[in-house]
Length: 454
Image: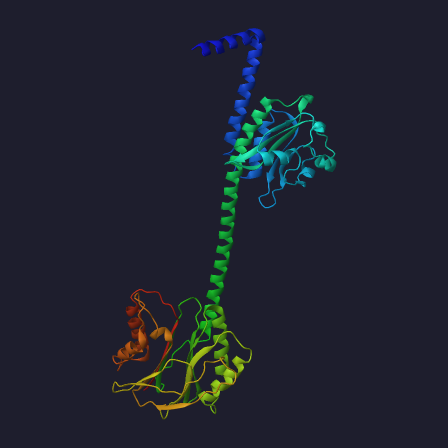
């Protein structure tokens, strides 16, 4: 209680000495400074860009602390050097090119010690560095430097130079500038977070643009890939019923098939699986199909054809290869000559319902080895017999328990197919595989080709 009376007495005494007018000036000065700090806190919400925030804060502070120049120096986290983030005054642009070593000058001392410093006579202070003055020609009489601290870590310093009217800086000036530096630390933190968000958004935009472009390119590649495959199935007037289907796991797959008439009595067919996926697989598939069709002629057996095509593909040491099975069907006799390169075992479904695996002499996939040799195998399709070719996307299809569809399930399925057309068998087989997978994603491409002798 006595302390309160003493404070009140001192206040009345001061009021008596200074007079009511002087007291009013002091109160108005304090009110002005309080308004400055309020304005600064409001400006933190006006923008999230670091430079703009600091410009606004400094311009507001200079209204109550008039000086010739002001600057913000930040600590480089890599080198510990101080660099001028913001420099106001006639030499601002020149000053911004300068970097101060750790501990150099008054600014370096404040950044290392975390203590505010008032220097009203720069010439008499041993910490003073005239490197900025030599570069710019700017004469510094006095300066006030305070740290910008964020969570006990000095992020930089705020410095004002040459108080107007040749007056010295006071403790009251120091307190004001320290209050100004506090929201600057918040501004730096907010700006850093904002920059990270901006960078993330920019990266997302770039990634999205790349993804959209790649998706577009993949769609185009998929369209080009499908253009290499037969678009129409033979008419019912032909002595055979052939049908094929390709279902890629992605936009562009690695499986392929083809069939075409060599002459009126011979039909060529092929089905394969490229080891890779995507655009590299599509390009390899396109080259393989082009070579198969370009080199096939009536006097060439499937084994001879694959030996020639393999020599072309393997010559450039490609990073991919392709398993394949192909053959020539003679319409008049039902004879089939076939050759294979590392592919799945074909099946024959006899008209009576028996299922036979086609035993062909094994060879290497195309492009695996340049001097590989491919062999011919023979079988005969009687009327009503069917040949089935497929890729491992069928037999290796998995369900959620990672069980595979397997050749055994394919064999069981084929036992149910007598009397079906080629298109009906393919549709039923895909349905059988997908029901087995029970919603598990398709992990590999699927290709199927069936050939029925009518």
